[in-house]
Image (cartoon, rainbow, N blue to C red; front, top):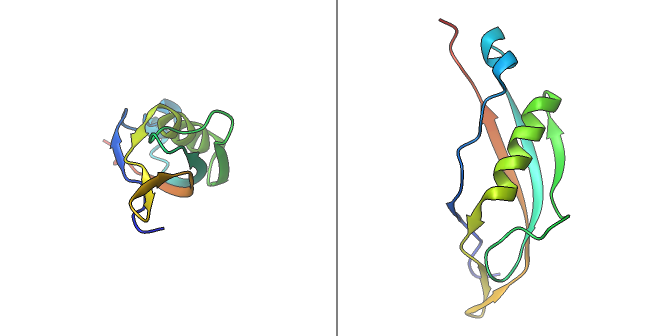
Length: 93
């Protein structure tokens, strides 16, 4: 692949409220296939790791609702499997 897909639009991750109140941070890694048009393929999203289930759910929701620049091989758009890490952190007030 010559050019990897890049996220170009979509919602911001929503921090799970209960974990935010508790001041709990964490991470999740999501795997997805981006089609040649730059959209996640339905059914391809998998949470690979998450420090808390809620972080995995939030990350998967954002990936599903986002759009990406397509991956390119020899100048042509192609399907690409991506692993997308997301970190969640907050400060308690």
